Amino acid sequence: MVNHRLVLFLGLLQLGLTENVLMTEVFEITVDPFMFNWTLEDVNNQYVYQPSLLNSPDLPSWVNYRYSERHQAGFLFGVPPNKHNAEILLQIIALNRKNYETRQSVLPIRITEKLNPARNEVQLKIDNLNVEDMFDTERMNRLKDVFRKKLWRESDEDLYVTFLASAIQMGARLPPNPKEGEGVVIRIGSIAPFSMELIELQAEVKPLEKVPLCPRDFKRTTVERYFREAGFALDWCTFRLFPDNSSSVLQSTTTVEKLSSNGREYNFEDHWESFSRGTIPRRSYSKEFAFSVLLPLFLLVLLGLLLSLVLCFHHEGIEDEESEVFFENIFHICTDYFHKKRFKEMERKATDTETNKISNDHFALETAINDLPSLNGLNFSPNLSIKSRSITGSPTFPLSSDVHMRPSPPPYVRPKFKPGL
Figure 1: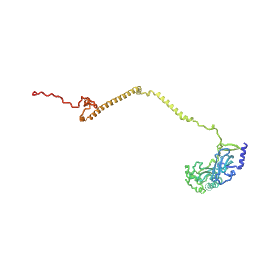
Figure 2: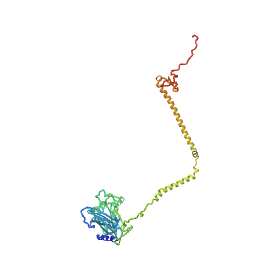
Figure 3: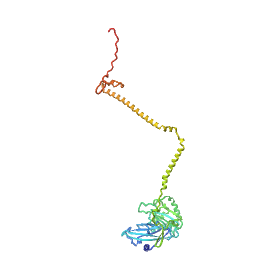
C-alpha cells in the first residue's frame, strides 16, 4: 500500500498540474510529446497515446479521446458530470514508435461547479469540419462571434460550448469524399433568453424538422452568409433551440462509486468492476413452453371432451335406420359385389373365345379359296362344313376324297310311256 501511494505521489509530482474542469462546459486537454518530456520531431505519427482511468481498462463514458494527425497530438474532451469537487485520475501511456520507448503520466482532473450555468442552448451541425478542428481557439471564437454579434447579442458575456461530438458518433454517415470533414454536432449555451433573430430562424427551418438527415447544401437560410463568411457550412435540418434546458443543471442520478487512493476518496462514474457468474440473469423458458405446448394441448383435450359429451347426450337423435341396415349387411354386400364382378369377367372371356373361333374358321376358308385359282369364280356359302368344301385329299390339303366340287346332276325324270316305241 505504501509503494502504491509512493508511485502515485511521484506521478503527481512529475505532472505538477491538476486540470480543473467545469460542469456543463466542454473541456479540452491536449496530449502531446511535451507532456512526457519528449521533443516533437519531423516524423509523422511517431508517438502513440493510450489514455484510461487509473487502474481501469478504459476511460469514463463522459471523456472522449481523439488523435489528430494534423496536430500530431491527441485530445481529451467531454462534459463532466454534475459532481461537485469530484476528482479522478487518468493514466496516459505514451509509446515512441521510433525507439519503442514507453512512458507513463498520471493526469488528475478536478470537477468544479460552474456559476450561472446555461439555461438556453442552440444546437448546430457543421458539415465541413472535424472534432479536432473545433479545438482551434481562433475558429471557435469566429463561431461564437456570429452569435454574439449577429444572432444572439444578449449572450455576449457568458456564451460557452455545452456539448461537442462527432457527427459519426451521433449516427451520421461518412462523407463520400475522404477529404471532406465528417461533421461536428455542437451546442452553445447561455443564461440569456433567445433573441428574436434566433426565434425567427427556428420558424424558418421548422419544416425541415421532419427530415432526419439532409444532404449537404440542402437548404440555405437568410443567415447563411454569416456562417459562410466565418468558414462554417451548416446542416439546417438539425438546427434546434432548447429553451430552459434542464440537462445543464440537473444532477446525475447514476450511482457514484468511491475509490480510496492516497488517503483520499475519488468519486467518479463508470468504474468497471468484475461480476460473478451467479449475478448474470438467466432466461426462463417456462412461459414460452406453456404458451407453445401446454396451452394447445389443453385446448385439444377440452374440445375432445366437449365432442364426447355431445355424442353421448345426443346419441338417440342421430340414429338412422338405413345406416344401421347398411352396416349390418356390409359383408353380404361386399360378397355379392365380388361374385357379380367375377361372373361378368367369366362371361366376357367366353364371348371373346367364341368370337375368336368363328373368325379363325372364316379366315382359314378364305385362304383356301384364294390358293385354288380354278375355284376363284365359285361362291361358297361360309356356313358349309369343311368336308363339303374339300376337293381331294393331299398331303398339304388333307380333305376327304368323297367330297366333289362338281355341280350336282339334274334330278332324274322318268320319260313318259309312248306306245310307238
